[in-house]
Length: 155
Image (cartoon, rainbow, N blue to C red; front, side, top):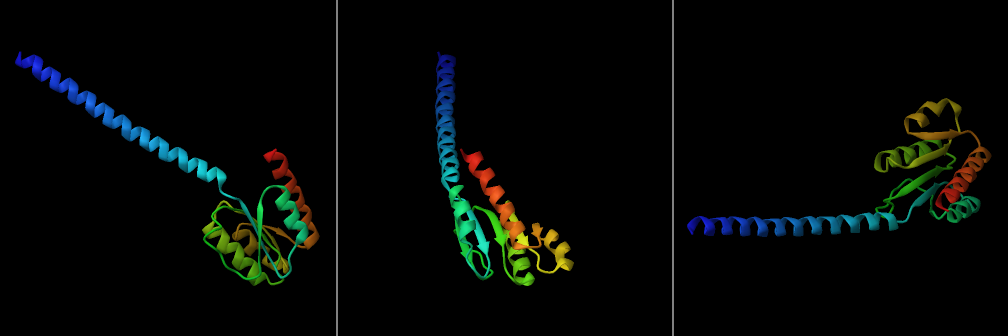
């Protein structure tokens, strides 16, 4: 009789422990599922750095479903968690390199494109992880192709 009672207690304890374990697993899976859905709904950004606003670039990015942010000084904001592209169009290589290095360190998945005003600095741009272009037209052509590819990929 005592062995049957002990067996019943052990089986009941195992059953209750299993229920508790499964409830914890279900809670973990539910939270993880919410996080992945939040990640999917986060807006992607394209940051355009330069002196003047590039309406053509903005139009291409918005057609591809990427929100554009135009900045004129070297800085980063907390809301830019998912910056996909950085386009540095500044007239100063120091500013372009600074913004490229900032984004390379804070957002390592960002694709960086920049204009190199002085060809001797190409190595520094490569170290900053940027794809280098020597004139504005080359860079704009490349960005048009990239946004078209992104648009087709999203469809």
